Length: 443
Image 1: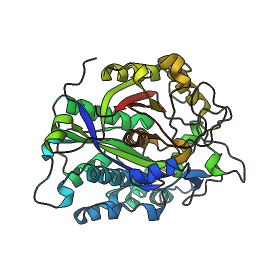
Image 2: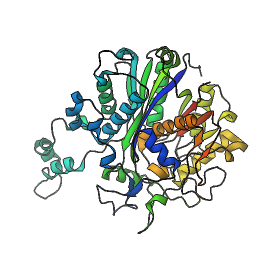
Image 3: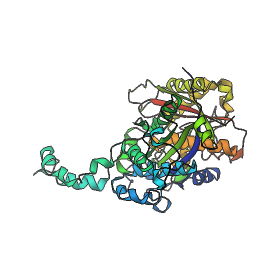
Image 4: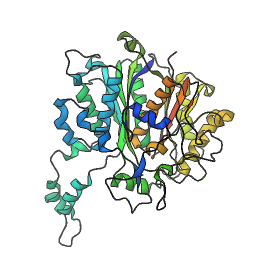
């Protein structure tokens, strides 16, 4: 694989998670060993294996507070996923000290034509009250759904702009409009791997000289009825008992791991060519040193049951190491998906052992899902933002819940100082796509 001709650095990070807006809120919670998982506040999930989710409270995030006045009317056609992407993008751009069209100033930091955008999206769930109202008016004389009546009556009860809330490319659409990013733009929809794949896309765009900077990552909310249903049929929901402590449900790599819970969140990074960042006087936070992607050959062809040996994950990690010109011995910590689903955990464990051999049990694992649940398309970018913070702080956050994990440094422990130079982030996905990135301190 050809090496990048331009070094790509990270100059800003932005997250929206159940702990609030911004990486500082997330980082503090992780270091304190907190979990945001609890009963859902908006739906009755008692019919599912678990009623628990990791949800963002209204008082912690309001999209209208992070968009310019000129764009506030557009919030009426933003799904929750779009809101999360817009919030994370604003945080990242402000963190990078970049002036865009959104700041309503005379000049901007990066010419619009040199500023790209790549954002991963999931299967956006339509709001139930919108759909049910339309479906109710499409019933036939027998009270059942009638497709002909849907075409003549039901669909009329959806607003004319209904579709604009739920197209996956609308995350990138709103971000590019708000910040006037006119460079290469794309949307990737590969479940949990989406945001890391988007970050890799931005890396390549900058590396070949088609942009000087990109806003990149992903966002998704799974804390809704459709999101819960999809996770249920994919056999990924934890089965919980009445009265169980929700903050202790998710236990990645533990012998008694029993599943995950849906979450909602997003992460966006500002990626820049090192030469462009230096020219504007920016101080890079870290370097995106390598990227790799692959497709697993899952036994069930759908990715519900991942391949047991984790070979697809191995391929992505090894491609990222080759891209970075690094050996496995150079990795100081790993942020995997760490879902707490036995089959997925087993594939990840096998992949880590294949790549790192005898070192596998000594490399610190950073687990995020016990704190924020499964944020779908937002997972990889949130993990990347945490990796950047680990490098800048030279610290590992706390781990919670897991005990008895074999072959990995993944059991519960307090936050601690660590000498960190390079962190591997990888994410497999429902569907079999895998993505891996190596984030490295600036040398």
